[in-house]
Length: 127
Length: 172
Image (cartoon, rainbow over all chains, first blue to last red; front, side, top):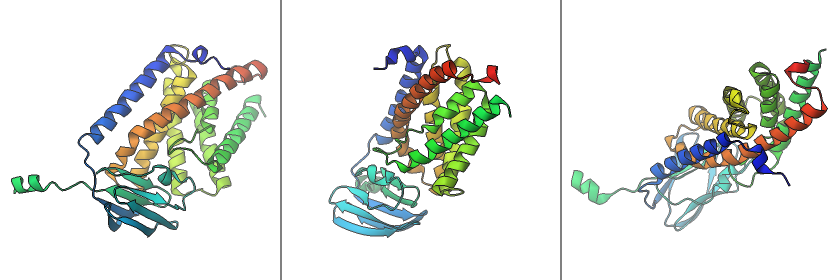
């Protein structure tokens, strides 16, 4: 059994803490006030392909730069399935459902992003 | 041929093999690729310096991408950019080795810089979506874990190789 303490220096703990604080802060800032999304935008190579409602159950094939990937919704979440990319990172990103969250498949250049929810009360007030 | 040249050649070969083999292994979580080839980069930086470290990175990425068939593809640019950033970052912090930082801490810094650089390159070259920043926190945490493991490997290899083989600048 490797004695980890023997190998770790005091500065390493500081690095770990600083990176965790930094990651936590970014996560907190980005996910503050995130609302449940209603619509997801699917784009390939920067060009919008379709918009899907998260409130429906769908399986939509989308042609990326490598091959077709399936975008699926189940009534509240959206995810990618059957990606042709080598690492399948996009599939492992799992299901998303909050506005602003996204799934990215870099090799296939497919991006699924949940659009911000339009606040009708705010629109009415500012109008 | 000097001993140092031979040792650097062996390091390039080892790094290229690690890079190629690791790219074939599926990852359990996004961004959880260990980057075992970075162990070789870290050791080269420690033993010889930045010039040799960058030389090994360059050859490793080119040879590894040739083997995996990804030369000059977007993933090649991401690998090269990320690895160079990691090497520069680790080289910058190496003077603090044994003065508060171990190779584990330095490796974690390298892993974070690698992922941040790859995220920026992805934004510039592939997907110009500012929302990519949403991926950053998970990347940072994954970098900590992978950097920790590769740093630990580097420490163990460093001890073993320096003890058993005449290696490093003093033997060149």
